[in-house]
Length: 160
Image (spheres, rainbow, N blue to C red):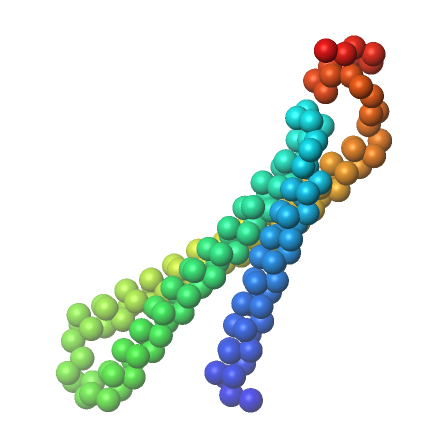
């Protein structure tokens, strides 16, 4: 198997994982909205709202990871194209400006790749933290007393 085939398989796997995580975040947003719908506004909903916010950040991060990954891929393609052109000409005709351009393109691609990696980590961790907050919220909902008291009041039997 060629190195290019391995790189392609690796990149395809990362892209599929990113789309899967974005889909999971989108489904989680929809499910949490259906669970939050019709609930009276109270501090009991804070973990559920936090889960919703984390999942929205996760979805956004997945989109940004794909965007920055494509930008990094374009920069890498430009470096490879420049290297191919330099191989075709005699090394005596390659100027320092061309070498500096190649180095700038490499650094640009590396920077964009690092940004994509940060968004990837943010996507994964916010999805996991959102799941944790959602489970905490549902646990609180199962065990909290459901009375006809005012949702902001801690005193049992007090109604507004």
